[in-house]
Picture (cartoon, rainbow, N blue to C red):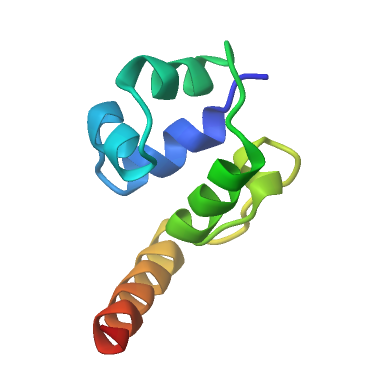
Amino acid sequence: MKLDNLRKLRKEKGLTQGEASKIFEVSLPSYNAWEMGDFQPKIETLIAMANFFHTTIDYIVGRETNDLTPEEKKILNMAADIIKEKMK
């Protein structure tokens, strides 16, 4: 299963595959294989991805659509970043 939404979410955050691979603590070839559909991430990694991208596992794996506009996603991401900073 090709994870097109993972690629889409990564690009929306302005991340390269190399940066994303470091965030999710895997090698670049492994991360690339996820986006290409050659391998599937472990459930723990999917949970981390959903948390990081503020979405659901179902969206990442293509089982649902994300009805938020790009502007709504941007606002949600900014709010989440502010909350994370305040929690440090």
